[in-house]
Length: 153
Image 1 (cartoon, rainbow, N blue to C red):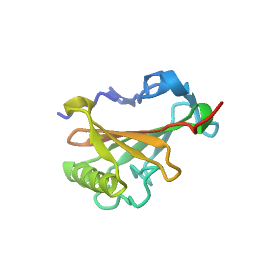
Image 2: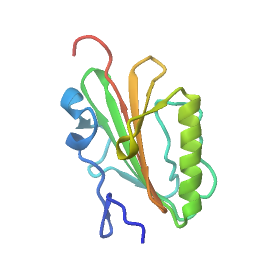
Image 3: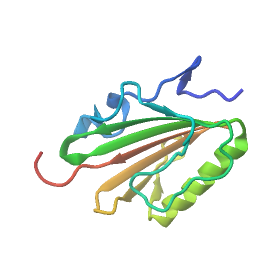
Image 4: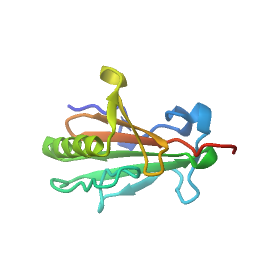
């Protein structure tokens, strides 16, 4: 058994806007093009990053399913969360390994200890980005938070 904190029975429940990092500052709202409850996509189940180019997840995706939500905040802040399930542990292992390598290549550094660890870096335009990765044997969750632009709202 590989319990996921994001799965309740047969339902995937990603974090609400208020639970995402940075909500107290950016006041997350669902992105305008985001359907209620997020997007489910079995055909292109890629856990990808928006703020770090160069990561192309390929390989063992058999049986994978992706759930994703997107949020906008003040001063063009943005947040994304993705959850994928796989038929076997090899799919998750490959995704985690590729993601760690890509984050390092993009200059992201691990911050925190154990369960509170996340990666900190910057997007191409210099805004701070926080990436959190959680996984089990057959699932992975990634949240990505890009700070808003400097200046007034």
